[in-house]
Amino acid sequence: MSADTASATAAPAEPQIVVEVVEKITKSELNVTTPPNTWGPGTMATYWCDVFDADGKVVGTTVGSMVILYQDPETGHFIEQVSEQISLPDGTIAASGLVDRTEVLQQKWLGYRAEGTSGRYLGMTGSRNFRITSLTDPSFPIDAKWELSAG
Image (tube, rainbow, N blue to C red; front, top):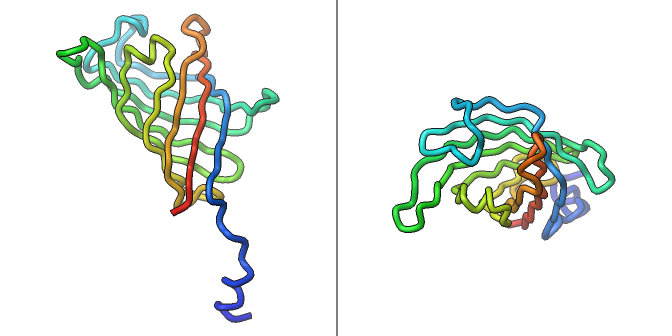
């Protein structure tokens, strides 16, 4: 089979993929010992999460890091840099960006850039949106949604 024939019969890339899951922290390492609502500039964390589908089945993992960079002089809110690698059975997604830590603690929906790095998601770009659903559960459950588009 020639390369031209193989490309003509290959399945077309999906134009858009939406993945909705729940993430729960299973382990974290921080450079502070204070509660999350007292963190400030220089606070750093690495965290590991299990990723659950709508049926509550573990379908992947997330590994991420964050650092609170500064306090916005106009709003008083803390701004953090987040970087994550999400591994799912059908591929991986990398996501990173700046988030308003104050809004994270207010349990608002927030988002930043995401890019497919392997498998079904390879070459796709879009966003990773999330919100913490409980500040009292030690696993800090997160509703997460990735919206990725081809090209």
